[in-house]
Length: 156
Image (tube, rainbow, N blue to C red):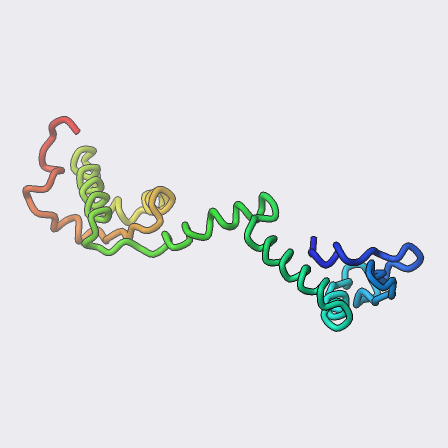
């Protein structure tokens, strides 16, 4: 709720107006229905008629912006930094190399054809598990160096 409501009260006789708590003037709420009501006229009234109250309103507004208003605001603030984690991994990044090695191991240990990396189910699984990994094609995996992990059928 806006801090401006510390200085106004909705008129009981007509909800289209708010009464100024300082001078009792009725100020239009800026709309014909409750969905269209706003606080612009109320703030303008404080700014032009009651400078001290307007200063207090600005202070209250600044204080409200410093603290989260509700759980939805907190969730939004927590998820904002994670949105930066949507860029794909560079092919030579450590994480991409680890995933690629595990795919090579999977192909070799389970005797999968190289084309498994082009199967829709495999692609969906990989995208679900790590959407930032850019899967290479079957030709890349077919040309994997002979000393790759998948040639060793030992323990994981």
